[in-house]
Image 1 (tube, rainbow, N blue to C red):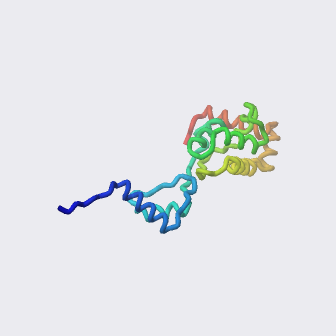
Image 2 (image 1 turned 135 degrees about the vertical axis):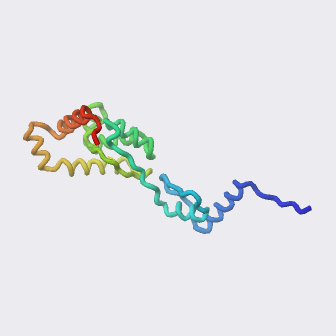
Length: 170
C-alpha cells in the first residue's frame, strides 16, 4: 500500500514562509502595526512586510482631559512608556515633571485626531504638538489674551473648564 505523508500545516507554512523570505530577500521587519488583509498569500504577505510601511494609528486627544491620560493612551497603543511621553511633552514645553509642570504642559494638547506610527519617538510627537501649539498661539491670539489680562495658559484653563461644564456637544 502506498503511504502518503502530509506534513503538519505549521510546517507547510514555515517552509513557505522561509522560501518566500529568501526569494524576496526579506530579513528584517520594521516595528509597527501592520493591517494584514484576509486571504493574502505568503508571497504577498512577505512583499507587504518587506515594504516596511506600517499602518498609521489614529488617536484622539479630546478623549482625555489630562496630559497623563493622553500619555497613557499613547503608551497603550505605541512603542514607548507613559513616562517617556510625559517627559518629552514636559521638555517640549520647558517644564519639569512636577504636578505644576505637567499641568502647564497639558496646554500643548489640541482636541483632534492624530495619526502616529508605532515606533515614532516621544520627542518627535511632542515636537509636533509644540509646533501646533506655537502656530495656534500666534502674535494676534497672544495679544488678545493679554488684552483680557490672561496668559495663553490661563486661556487654556478657562477653555478647559468651559468645555468640561458644557459637556460634549456635537
